[in-house]
Length: 510
Image (cartoon, rainbow, N blue to C red; front, side, top):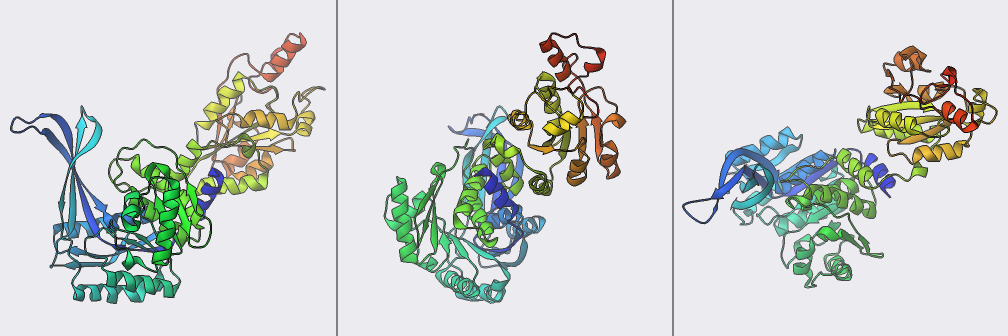
């Protein structure tokens, strides 16, 4: 499952994605909550840091951009300092703000949060102060917004509507955009405001209500997964949706298609620090996924990951594809058998790792009788980069290296399985040749390492790696530990100085 999700993240591309909705400026005042005030029974916050972040639809656009898509925001802000701050922040995050309309008839919506720390640790939100106007946009402003927006609908691969109930998402604006999106074949996904009347969203591709919003909209108290199935079906039927994503916080997401079987997609339990922005992150991931042509089930699974990472952070912070991939790898360890791959497969896997900015480390050897020297050396090697490849001599290759009449002791499949069980090793590739030259030329690792008493130029393949600018690094040793010496002791022989080389018993074999 994790491997397929990682592969899906690698296919997202950079689709043009439009976000329409209520822009909010989130202000954070950080400080230490030191004591109770002498003036009133309230906590005294000694502020030491102010911070502005994008919120609402502006945050969704920011998160879309953070996922690597080309984000545009269509909204209305006040002609005030906060509106200028919103546009400045959008531009800094490479969000197209050409559809942001300033007006003197209403202020920019601002949410000011006070974050207190106890003894410089464990920050928690203490208070929120909102400055806003919730009246619908006047008709002339709605007309101006649509005049700017409708001619550009076909430029986008997905449209996300982030309705915070601050007046931008009027029924007229929503229905105009939904119809235009449908006519252009562009999916329209709505994150609805809490309420009972969702008729303005009729005809959208999908909606993403949370548990409470779903309950209010359908009248079904969503306590169980079956409740969510029933509520999602009702939303699809009444709003003529293609499908509904009912988000259930720690219980994940329920996906209900208009035609098909509903599915519950659970999520991993998280350490929740702040739920702010989790719904925005889910909407952004769903939008970018659909814009890239992913199926709704895969999109929902990825949205679980993105939303889960968001609640682990304090405040609203964009989640990147790289963070999602790292989370998938960290909490869904690769099955050892999946680490053993042929060269063609490995080239594709390494290309993906490099696209994520990872540094590739390579080593090679026979690894007959895996021992403490091997483990120590491989752990050190893995710390030099992000991905460790082990080139493993095949059985025929070991025999050609004159290891002895009874070597290898273990066949290549068993040796590969032992290496795959090590957390430090990412991939194993068996090679038939006497040297790993072909692997080095095909994979072009950033670093070639070798355990033992080798100098740089004694490491097989050093000239190949250095020719394209890679590094060649000899590793340290664990004195007195080598496969040859262990085999000699098992035979009752006295190891000679020639077979005391740590880690490996033949310099050519590596």
